[in-house]
Structures are given as C-alpha cells and as structure tokens.
Length: 399
View 1 (tube, rainbow, N blue to C red):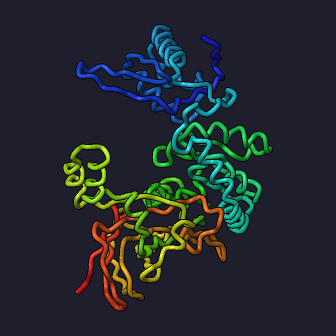
View 2 (view 1 turned 90 degrees about the horizontal axis):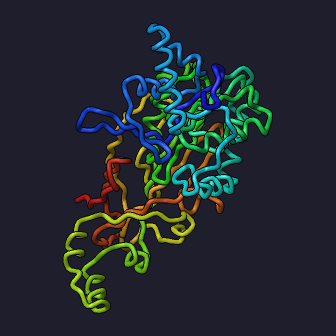
View 3 (view 1 turned 180 degrees about the vertical axis):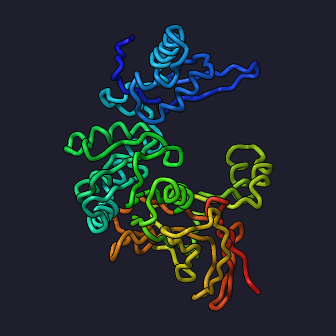
C-alpha cells in the first residue's frame, strides 16, 4: 500500500484546505494537488489531527465487510499520495522554502538570539516545574521550552504546535534524548486534546501587540479543557502598557499619508494624489519598531497600564478598557507606544517597554500615531481607549 503498513502512524498535513463547491462536492487541497473528497475522507482528516496507526484508522470505518475495508484503504492511500496525510514518524522535512510566520527561520533566529527572553523563560521553568509534573507547552516552536520542562524533571511534556516547525521540534526532542518524555501534539491548542490533563501550563504567545497572538483566549481555553484545577502557569500575569510620546517629525512623515505629502508627490510625479490623501483622512496610522528606537522619544507622561491581566484567573475574552492619565511635561502628544510587562515566576520578569527592554529584545512595539498632534501642558488629562485586537488605541482629551 504505497509503502504503508498496518503499524504506520499517519497524521493530517498542516496545509490541507477544504473547498466546498456550489455543486455540493468538496475539494481537498494539499501540497499543490487537489482531490474530490467524500464524507469518509473528511472524517479521516478530522481523526488524523493526532497521529494514528493505519490499522486504527481502518477500524473506525469497519462494519461493511471486505468491500468496505477495500474502499476505506483506497481512500487512505489516495489521501497519502496527495500529501493530505503524512507518515507521522518520517524524517522531519525541511521547512518550506518560503516559510512564513512562525515557520520562518528568521523568527526563530530572532527569538533564540534574544538571550534575555529565552534565559528568563528557562529560569522560570526551572523554578516552577517539579518532578512528576505534567506540562503543556503551547506554541512549542523550536521546542526549547518543552526541553527545559523535561530537563527540570517533568514526568511528561505535551508540546503543542500547529506549524511545520513542530516536526523540527520533534527532532530536537530526539537529538537531546527526551523523545520518551515529550510528545508533540500537532495542531492549534484550541483544537486538540491531550492524553492527560496538565498541571503546569507554559506559553510564549505574547505578540508585538501583546494580545495579538490571542493569549487571553488561548489560555482560557487551555485552562478549561487541557489542565487540572491545581495549575501553575508561566507567565502568570501581564500588564499591557501605553507610553504617550512625542514622535520625531521625520518618523511621522515617513509613516503617515498627509495632504502635505500628497502635494510633494504631485510635484515629484506630476499626478494628483488628493484622493489618496482624502482616503487616509481619519485613519489612525500604525507601525512597529524596535523598542530601542523608541527609547529616545520624549514621553509626555509615565507608562500607563492599559490592561492588567492575571493570566491564571478567569478573564473576559474581550478587552475594552478606558484609562485616564495626566500629562507630566509640556510638549506635544503625537501618539502611543504599546508594550508589555510580564511576570513569569517569582522575581523573573520580561518587558518590551522602551527604556526598560533588554538590548537583545526580540519583540517590536506597535506605535499609534494621532491623526493630529496635540500641544499639551503639565496637568492636562487624556483618556486612552484600549481594545486589544479590537483596533488601535484611541486617545482623547478630557475636559
């Protein structure tokens, strides 16, 4: 059977796409190929979110005699040939040539070269994990945090990863002698099950916009479905921080479409850019940059806590806060830099806040530019409306 045996462990490929056609048929797309699929194939793909042996998969469709067994086997072989299901124990493939997101070599290079980030996570894991613990590591990536949990004495670690990088992590576990104590769970944490509940939850899913990787929703789901009530967690709390700043004029000009810019482009290129400038009116410009680049920008107030998240508690899945602050110096309010402060364990913290972030910080910070700068004086009051993933923060003057 195309190199398959009853003991072959199969798993659904990560790049499978189902397309529902207007004629009621379903196309399975994977690895550049397409196959028409029936209900049996779709159910197989659902079952193979986790590795299963070929014989186990055949048993799920038993009951129709020899002909049913033959039909089921033919569907399995066809899905395997098309690349929609894979041999779970085959040698780890190389990452895609044009890997994006967390499969990108660049991302892992940046994170592992952030020695402050990685070392503090490893220190927190060494402090929190105890012998006989069961650990769930969400978004394992290269696998380093799962390896640290196993080294700290965990009885077993379940490393959850949706991307192709998970197969590299599996090889990392083997290369470091921990294959028997770390199990790779392929898929998003919100769509998988663990063989047993974890009593330690580890995650590094803090985004450049701190809530941008769904940390609140993901941890809430994991605590409910994957973990025991007596849970220790890394990180255990996080503040989202806003810093009201004066942004250098050159930086503003390079990142904001204005009528002045449109006039310059007209002079340069001989076309009217008025419609482009009009379309940008009222839109809040945003960009990201290294926190070190923003550390020299004058702040018109101290850091403002936009959201305080006790990650081990029940949290609202939607953040919608309004926080006031007072200006501490005369100047000009141009925008807001958003960052985080996270407590990983006792005495172990991480931050991306400009001025406090480590020199090797791998996070960038999002900057929101106010549509029109505001001259401010000491004592002026403003409010920041912060909704996390609900859009850029909004700043308004208070009477």
